[in-house]
Image 1 (cartoon, rainbow, N blue to C red):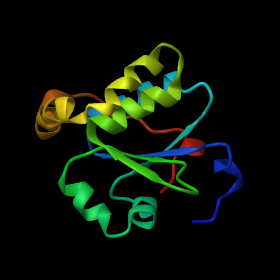
Image 2 (cartoon, rainbow, N blue to C red):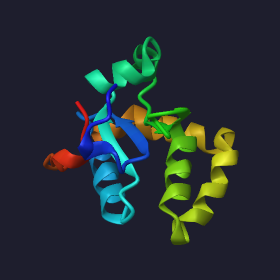
Image 3 (cartoon, rainbow, N blue to C red):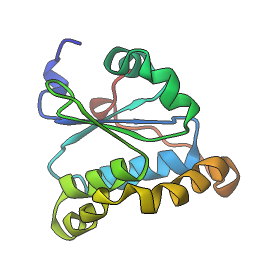
Length: 138
């Protein structure tokens, strides 16, 4: 994918279920603490996800997972589920950096992540929000 002027400053791509209110709230939370503007977002079922993930996109859609592509324009290290969440904390830095330590123990947190992912549509009700366009890929 060609880099445009608008996405040059963003380093990491977060792919999320754009139909999930809980996922949208997570994106909103990341936006509020991402002062360095390290993250850009895209729906997991979108055009950008297909371009960056290829055939893996279908598998991740079935797994109900959040996907983090670190340095998505170059190396694209992929993290999913709880590991992705904790890697996001690492990049945000500050107090959140210490939560990133848990990214080394996804086997402890993935069962909890999976349980929440299975019931996420029932757990949250609320109005949807829109991601600011400069932080969103199709």
